[in-house]
Length: 130
Image (cartoon, rainbow, N blue to C red; front, side):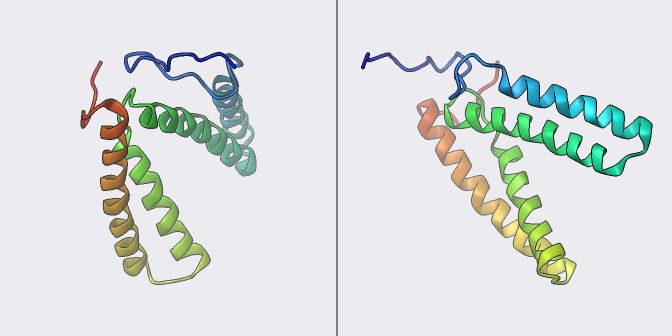
């Protein structure tokens, strides 16, 4: 096996699947489905398009964040908030104010953990701007 140096922190991290544009294809497919769902009125197509587009953007955010390229702390903690609030409200059927309190607590915890993870990956920076 050949030892390769890791990517520099000022370069976008490479995808685990190499140069195949999976993220771009996922986002493009999501946009096309959103357009088709909007025009045809198909709610399922619209929702699948939104989910695909969001998944593509989320994957890129996770990869950039944990490689120390760009901080996406608030976005990633916000996803944790949305998932936790949605699960507790829609699946568990708890009252909304309790779901929001749990979501906010998990947002705060995940924000702190994501910030520490980025600082570790970036060599001590709390955020990185172009």
